[in-house]
Image (cartoon, rainbow, N blue to C red):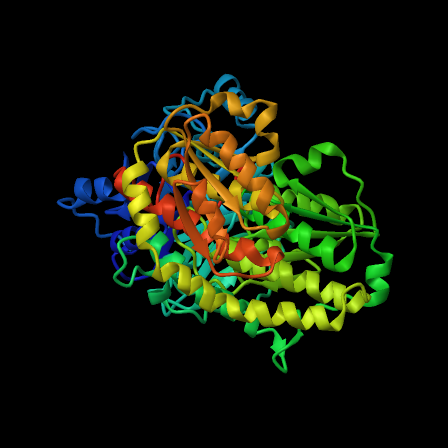
Amino acid sequence: MCGIVGYIGDKKATDILIDGLSRLEYRGYDSAGIAVFNDGDICVEKYKGRLAVLEEKIKDKDISGTVGIGHTRWATHGEPSDTNAHPHTNYSQNIAVIHNGIIENYIKLKEWLMKEKGHSFKSETDTEVIAHLIDYYYEGDLLDAVYKAIDKMEGAYAIGVVAKDEPDKIVAVRKDSPLIVGIGEDENFIASDIPALLKYTRDMYLIENGEVVLLTKDDVKIFNEFGQEQKRDIFKVTWDVESAEKEGYEHFMIKEIYEQPKGVSQTLNRRLEDDKIINLDGIKITKEDLERIDKIYIVACGTAYHAGLVGKNAIEKYAKVPVIVDVASEFRYRDPFVDDKTLFIAISQSGETLDTLAALREAKRKGARILSVVNVVGSSVARESDDVFYTWAGPEIAVASTKAYTTQLVAMYMIALNMGITKGTLSTERYNEIIEELKNMPEKIQNILDKYETTQHLASSQFNNESVFFMGRGLDVEVSLEGSLKLKEISYINSFAIAAGELKHGTIALIEKGTLVIALATQDKLYDKMLSNIKEVKARGAYVVAIAKEGNTEIEKSADTVIYIPDTFDELTPILAVIPLQLFAYYVSVARGNDVDKPRNLAKSVTVE
């Protein structure tokens, strides 16, 4: 959510800012802008729309300065417009600010600045208040003014600030929103995510919560909330910029769907010793630890939450520990029963999801042990956890998560298996059987991908539907939720998922002739019941697409279209059953002419509450 880039050095800042912002477009945004020192002034250019609009507007302007900040905005306060776009300035335009997050007390600050200090404002945003607040405290020392301003600010934010009277520096602050610093030769950078800077440097500082950064072209100084300088090891990025490029695919999403066999394989095989013993990246959960744990909370948002629902099933099945899965945005407000006998598992692709971070901190405050499953090394969730299990999905750029989900599933199975064998609630024979079948998953995923034509053809005939129902039983309910979310995210079709047994309790009233129902029937012990549910909706005119295991051909008598997945254990079907649902959502979105990778109103990393 929102992209931040800053540059200070000897090169033309505009080119670097635009390039960096282009590599953050996946985060979601509705306007873009830059502020660059130019001929003794701060030149601000900002426009509603895609980054291409900004590029077109400034292409004939001479903005040759070597210090600047840039931003792509996702609207929270005020509609998308040129005026509300970032950067924002004070009245005299000698201070410019970019901001990711929300200033919760901005109205109070704005009223104080207007009534008591005579400030006037141009925009509807909370960010403009930051510029005016810094201006109020500014007495020739930008770093000092920023410290005084943030002391008055409440909320979550990452900000970058420049001042006309100090053209040789950038000041940046991080509080609950992601911020990194890139280190170069005679140049330095700030950004909200690593891909923005990989073209220029692989050496990064990961900024901690509450820290303030002072950048010049020759130096980077990091201070804590008390103004004390901090020492920081350089984090060297090891993955290639090419892994964040499309590599010939039409969209990032379809590229990432096809990268799932590799992601699943790496997430699993990098942690198998002697081809069967799970090593959880040094995480030591002993039998005594497990016997002491009386409950487990799995907390996440969106797709990660759906992975958590599958994880609950696996942990309860293998380790026999009660598991509660909660939506991170609600967790803190329930006064949950968390103490030092609780294991708290946070799941997040980015590791920067603010709701998940807030829930994690609440659980940690109450004494819980924190285990996180994340995809981004060095992210906030990872750094604030006691134990970390990294998924090996690689950079995920499309807003709609695909490969992060399947690697999260594998992570949760591995954690559950490790708990079960350690605790003694899972037999060695069954443990080995499941490990062997997990090793088959990359090939089985590829098998589904190789038969994409059925799903593509289905999408081409059904893309005009404006309501779609997903249903299943057992674990198929959890996969239905994820399939429905994928379709909603990128096609804008009103879809929802239900437990098939709940049809008769209201939902069946919505079924009419031509209604598209996607019925998952991958659970052998519930297969016959699903056939009955399919017949229920068929009798009322629904067009039924069934997802079933190979060999279960009886379903062809009831469904209009059947998509088969390779046979596997019931508890592992979510890894496979989600693949055709991802493909369906993708092809429907393409057929409807949508921006697949950057769906409207959505952001990749949600860093506001």
